[in-house]
Every structure is written in structure tokens, then in C-alpha cells.
Length: 228
Image (tube, rainbow, N blue to C red; front, side, top):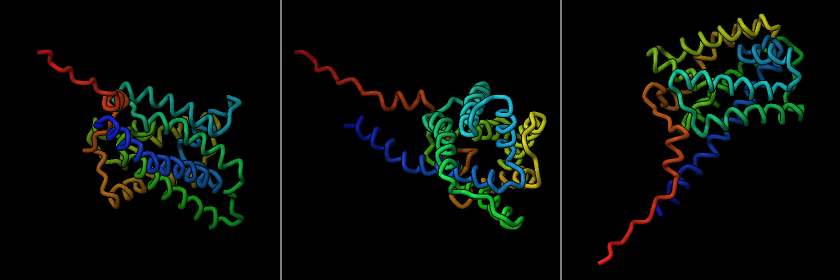
């Protein structure tokens, strides 16, 4: 009975998790199609796929796997949500982009509006999928790991990470524009704003990692009856 309750508890978190992952993909595509310079991670992604024949979504998946590995070495053990994030954001990106749902506006103001919508969307997407506490995504796991390790605010850690990958992406040939700088300096604040409104504190929240989840969901052994 207790085992089934634990499974139901986990399954009830899935809609919120997948909503967050879908929102994240929408936010990334909004910023990409704003066409005023991509976000730092996207600049890095596009720089990488200049040399490898893969889609934008597949590039996101590969980079996510690489970041998960780095996060592991600073003490961040991935959770179920970390693995799902790594795969499904890239999957949703390619699916949504194939529909032509998001188009580049004709005016510069329209492009800036689309960029801002993307930034705000990713802020809330981050909140929704982290709120389930089943592990942060690759990039946010790295962010949360460094926030706890260095005891610095989210905006500073996220800003530093994104400026670093932006530099690497630029030298790989990824596009850089005014939107890139806007994103680099505002994304951390967008995430922190969503955290504040949603009352989520990444410094004190302990995510359940994959090992802990497996142990929790593992069927318990029936108690042996004493033989008289």
C-alpha cells in the first residue's frame, strides 16, 4: 500500500514537470526566432552544430549530457527530472520548430518583445520543473550546485555561467547580438523573480536524486511472520 502511494506521489508531479519542460522549449525558440542574437547557451549550441550535422534540439541534448557530467563532479547527482530535462527539452524544440508556430517578427520592436517573452517564459519554466524537486535540469543543476557550493545569489552564478558559455560559443562561430547581451544580464533576474513569486528557495531545497528515488519506489519486502 505504501509503495503504491509513493508511485502515485511521483506520478502526480509529472504534469507540472512536463509543463515546465515544454515551456522551456517554447522560451528557447522564442528567443531564437527573435533573431536579435541568441541566448548564451543557444549561441554555444549553434556554435557546436556548426561542426556537427545535428539539429538544434539534438545539440541541446548532447550539451545537456555534457553539463550533467560536469555537475556530477561538483557533487550534483542527477534526478529523474534531470534526465527527462536533458532529453525532452531538445525533443520539444525540434517538434515545435517543425510546426512553424513561432515566427520572426518584421519589426525590431516586435523582435525585442518576442525576446522578452522568451526570457520570462524560461524564468517560469525553470520554476515549474524545479518545484517538483526530482532533480534540476543539466544547466540548472550546475547553477544550483554552484549556488550552494559558493553561497552566492542565483543571478550572479547564472550570469557568470552564461557569460562563459557565450564566449566559447562566439569563438565557435555562434551568433551574437544585442539580444545575447540582454539575455545574459536578465535571465538570472527572470529566474529569481519567478522563484520569489513562487516562493522557491534554491539554497534550501534538497532535490531527490536518482538513487534516492529508486530506493523510495523500490517495493518493500513483506514482513516475515514468526513461526511459533
